[in-house]
Image 1 (cartoon, helix red, strand yellow):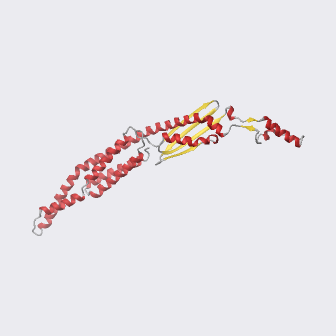
Image 2 (tube, rainbow, N blue to C red; image 1 turned 30 degrees about the horizontal axis):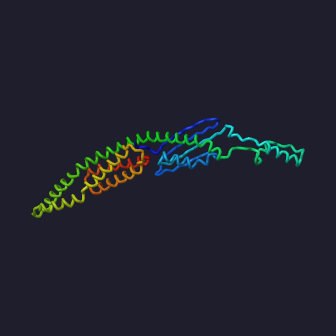
Image 3 (cartoon, one colour; image 1 turned 30 degrees about the vertical axis):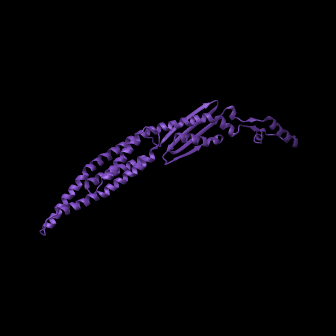
Length: 291
């Protein structure tokens, strides 16, 4: 199943006074590129989150945004009474009459005890990683839904190309026959003015040269092969990213179309090639959003 590179997922939890929320957004990119935004106490988990996301989302620009609020007993700093009393005693030892503002003493080293960032990260790691996985799964589901719409649109253009290519294939032999008829008539008209007859072998030689120069059978076959491979990739059951391969195939389809256009000077074929190239251009635009 084809998946797009645009997606959004959000998960959250609130347990024992700890609130966590994870949002993941993805947009187009040729490669995997992650931007993990974490609150200060959870910064040490950045690499682990990046690795976890990359295992589930293999292509695109990924933004992971984590919100964290801790109102539990762990999130509240405690006062070290002994240290605070020691500060007060020292101040009064200098001037017993001084008025001590205890609240201002709370900023002094050692007065407040709180968990280190490592302690916070370790305590919340398991829950956070579970939420990250859940948000990734939401993103993937959205990518699948958009990928289905993308696949339907691509199939419309593939059918259009196949129809025009089939008519070009049928038309190709007629082009040489029509050229032979026109050439024979033109030469006869020229030679009749000077009283000479057309040599059949000369006409056939010219026709053979023309047929060689305008032979598009190989290009038609290759273009048809690219269409078949393209369809197989978007209808495949595996979950491997195919966006880059589809992009390459669309470039090859455009190259074969240009070669056919340059080799075949037939008006009807030229008009159909214009239609094919328009469809290929549309495909090239669309596959930029395929994972």
